[in-house]
Structures are given as structure tokens and as C-alpha cells.
Length: 485
Picture 1 (cartoon, one colour):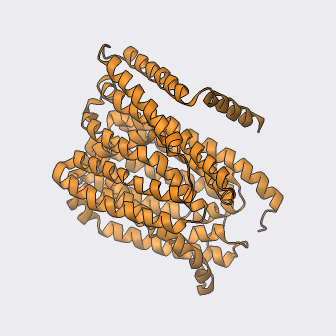
Picture 2 (cartoon, rainbow, N blue to C red):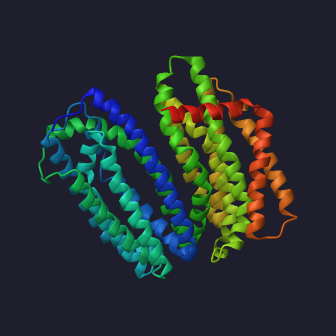
């Protein structure tokens, strides 16, 4: 199998950006709609069990790859069949071993988290899904190396469409946790069949110490960074599950899912695009400073008012939407977690910038700091104050991001006032107006729509008042460039 040439790489890379951006937006919209429908029919305890069990399995997934797939993608020359089969062999040994350990630990997990039979079956379903997913790794690697993103993305989209339709349908029919068990297995089967249809590869087993040694040179360091992120996120969920129980995890996860929506829609895609841009500007100090300032401003411009709007309006949403009253306990955690994500809106782009200019050790140390703080504060506060304490712990971890801002500013002198403070002031003005007007309106969908409109207008007027008409001109230029390309 031959590698693609340079011209083809450029063409497919551009096409890939468009495809991946479109896929990301479509799947985010689909997942958001499905999630809000799902919240109507699942109890907090049922959703909490899914989060806990998923975290346990996700933690095991980290050990199922050890960076070999990434090493195959990064490899300069086309991987040989021995490389592919060695990776496949090692992965299958690891996956089957981990799934066996998982299944043997089912009684322990079930007793520790007081799971029902449906919770136990969910563990088995996710274990089976892990096995099926591991079989897709080599065809996925081959498609990524050839930059065939359309073929790579199509199975992912089909998987998520099938998963969400089955999940919501079964939840509406009262299947509860069984909805997740059935949906994850069907999703894995659909994805496996589709990717082998688009990228055939004859499964085979081989083992070469030389091939494995070469792949480990890149794979192991790559996987260490992944492990820290896994430890910080899924590891905390596993611990919290034993402290606040499935219902508490359900409430906390609801607040996290809702509060993260602005970051999902406005920050994640920007971060992917700006990394290569920052990398090219690392020797042009003034241009880099302006780019960092403007990119953070753009993210904060959209994320800050969205977070405040969610916090202010969510009490009405919980009351107005049928079956949502059970999530009222998440309103206080929503406030604290929104603080965490507000800091993330600025600091994620800064760590992205530090990586781009070659300061990856600094981001590694920052990740260690956040992981240590998360493990030190969140479980302790959860023991003392349950769900509200855990969410307050997340806000404290977010506040520690001022350290990242201070460190990043030493390397790139971006404007904190222009990028963060101005959108924050405009958002606070919007919040004050919304809270004032809210007192004079009856609680109904019509009033909710009025509040959204008032929020958009008041925020827009505030930010234009501080930035000036240059904001409108920038928006016009961005749209012109987008359509031009």
C-alpha cells in the first residue's frame, strides 16, 4: 500500500478540516438534542450509574492501546504488514485481558456502587463494546494515514446517529439503564461493519520485538499525557461514585453536561484551528500576541454570556420542561461548575499556545497541578458537603487557572483586558439586566424567549459599546473570508 504524495496531502488536509468541522458540529447538535430528551426519561441515579460505569471502562481503555495506534499514524514511512499485525496482536491481548479483569470484578463493582442487575449488565455491554471497538483500530489508522477523512468520519456519524436514536427511543419506552446497554453494543457492531466495508483489512496476528520497540518510542510518551487527563477526569468520577452515590453523580454530571455546552460549540473547534496557526507564528512575537489575544477574546465573547445565560435561565427551564423537576438539585452545582468552565475558556487556549511554541513541559506541569488539586479538593469537599461540595471543588480548581494565565503571559504578552475582562464586564451587565427583568415576568415559554432576546440585545450593545464598530467589521471580514474560501 503506497503513501499519498505531498500535493494530495495538502488537498486532503484542507478537505479534512472541512469534513471534521462539519462532523463535529453535526454530532454536537445531535448529542445535545438527544441528551436533553434523555434527561426527561432517566432518573438521576440511572444517569449516574452510566457515568460511573463508563468512567471505569474509560479508565481501562487507557491501558488497551499504550499509544501504538498513534505511533502508527505518526510513523514517517508506511507501516509494514508486520507493524500492523504486531500492533493488532498486542492490542487484542491487552483488551481481552482488561475485559476479563473487568468481568471478574463485576461483583466487586456491583457491591461497591450498589448497582442493580441493569447496572451489572451495562458493565458487560461496555466490555463487549470495548472488544468490538479494538477491532477497528487498524482500518482507522490506515484511513488516517491516507487522510481519507470522509471514509473515517462516515462510520463515526452513523454510529452516533444509531446510538442516539436507539438510546432515546428505548428510554422513552421505559427501558432505563437497558437503553444504554443495547445502544452501545449496536453502535459498536454498526461501526465495525462499516469501517471494514470502507477500509478492508485482513485481520492477522504477528509479533515483532523490533517493530514494537520502534513504536514504543513515540507511543509511550504520547500515552503518558493521555493518562494524566484520564486520571483527572474519569478517575475522579470513579472516586466520587463511592462518595456521593449514583444519584449524586447523576446530578453533578447533568450540571457538567449543561455547563459545558458553550465550550463544546465555541471553544473546541477554535482550539484545533489555532494550534497550527500559533505554531507558525512562534517566531513572530507581535503577531502571536495579537493572535492569542483575539482568539481568547472570540472564545470568551461567546462562552461568557452563554454560561451566564444558562445559570440565570436554567431554573425556569427545569420548571417548565416536563419531567425536568428531578434535576432541580443540579442548579447550585451548575453555578460552581460554570465558574470552572469560564476559566477554561481562557486557559485552554493558553495551554494550546504554550504547546505550539514548544513549552510542552510547562503544560505537563500545569496538568499535574490541576490533577493534584482535583484529587485533593473535590473528594474531600464531596465528603463534607456532598454534590454541592464536589461542584465547589471544581470551581476552586478553575480558580487556580490564574497561575496558568500568569505563566503564559511571561512568554507571550497578550492583553488580559482586551481578551477576557471586556467580555466579562459585558456579560455581568447582561446578567444584571436579566435578573432585574426576570422579576417582572411570569414563568412561561413566552417569557423565556423574551429573556433570551433581552440577553442577546443587552450583551451585544454592551460589547459593541466597549469594543466599538471594529467588532462588526471583524465579523464581516470573517464571513467574507469564509465564503471566499
